[in-house]
Amino acid sequence: QSVLTQPPSVSAAPGQKVTISCSGSSSNIGNNYVSWYQQLPGTAPKLLIYDNNKRPSGIPDRFSGSKSGTSATLGITGLLTGDEADYFCGTWDSSLSSGVFGGGTKLTVL
Amino acid sequence: EVQVVESGGGLVQPGGSLRLSCVASGFSFSTYWMSWVRQAPGKGLEWVANIKQDGNEKYYVDSVKGRFTISRENAKNSLYLQMNSLRAEDTAMYFCVRGGRSYDYWGQGTLVTVSS
Image 1 (cartoon, each protein chain N blue to C red):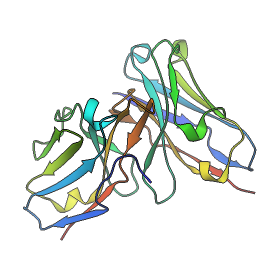
Image 2: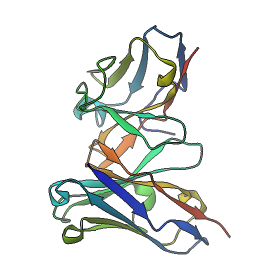
Image 3: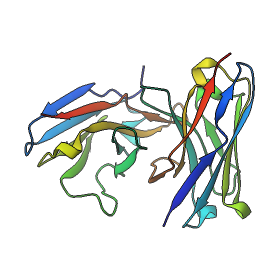
Image 4: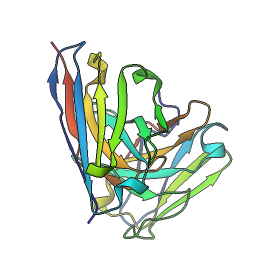
């Protein structure tokens, strides 16, 4: 059971928008930055969003992040079939003194 | 180009030991926190441990405390994970990652299988 809670799966049509939620508590999301990772099948994860809403160089602005209280959200607009992947949220947990991840959300672009 | 390359994985019996290594290049290794993250087959990501730039601060997930030790050798741009008393549930792909709380570069991983 993951410390952070994500929906197991989401789906949307090409060109549409999807959001993926990540729920935590005051000891993790509530007081620490959130990051998001994309894992395409058979590859290592890739950083999409850091510090709640910042995009690394090379990540298109179709990807966005936000945080409110003890929850965070990843948004993806203009969906492409190539966006089909697993998405993970992550942060630090100050009570556990350890990093924590969500269980992951599988995105299907129908 | 930033690269991190893991090695040292393999098949080990329960109770055995393994030492993972990670060599970094393309950035100033000694100025970054580094971490290990693992992923069991078909499962999600699990943070394992991290280490401060000078090696004087380390943190571990509860399930590996007392069994795993993270270390680094800045002169060799290298990160290590000494894994003792291995259990079946430690079977996973182990990723070396740059960063302490968010992880911007990932290696391709090294597979550890604990089985008799």
